[in-house]
Length: 371
Figure 1 (spheres, rainbow, N blue to C red):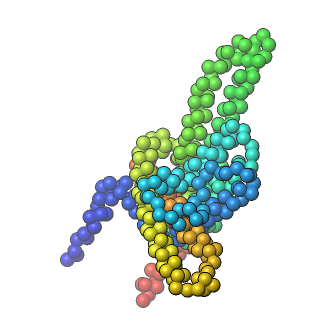
Figure 2 (figure 1 turned 120 degrees about the horizontal axis):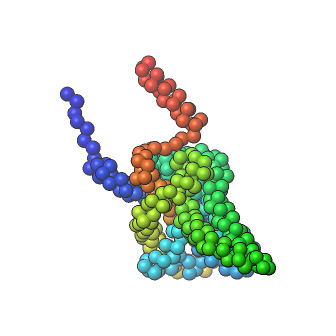
């Protein structure tokens, strides 16, 4: 007689309350390949900061995770609650960079700072596609996509992602041009005052529509990446899904994002506190050892210490970056299930890869049957 299958209690809770799947995000962000891509994102963000300082003498407004100095994040004992604001700013760094970039473009501030913000944003964009592809596979299938295949996917889908993000910007620009044309009509002698006055009423809803587009883009552009990464779709599908989900589930999305990211900030904050204690103990041991040696023997090159502190700090902030994109993917998948009733394990593979997987599975079944 066949024994009944006993489902683990946590699986039953997750089936009854799907949003409990977000509890898997800390573990998914800690996957080796995802953590490696997060580390590369933080490292190249540091490189972009160096490039930005060569482009302009002004201090960049964006946070530079991984910058280590004598009073840096990990070299001195600090309080976790005092660092919470900095960690929160670093946790949503992609959104802050996007806000800075659109704010400069809106004010027509064409300066080297725009190029710096573009470097920051493109860094988050490219590596974000890679992380989203691997995170979606882990979240839905429970098995990852290799880093090489995810990188090729990111290169292929980069134009679609850019088109999906630039499309609302293009619509907003058309609205501003139309409003500018209405205001210009009012400057025409004699009839301009009447025609411009009649058409002036259309400028308010048009600018309201443009503001909604820009706010939706500022909040939802990371979801465009997760749509394309999970569905392997085009830019129009990603744009329409994102704005439809934001329209119907915005409070739930914002609440889930805030709670999940608060957990990630707490994890990274505790890791930084432990790291500071460890570095403090290392410095104490180093000072005691130096006191037993001669001055020539005790002389240690500081460059290696700064190097390893920089790499370790980038690893911590790389986890925060990976955690951010995993959170975006998890919220998209659960929102998709809530709105479209799509199963959580739905994941669109690449056509060639799906066919190769089916062939390999058939060969394995035949070999098993033959054996």
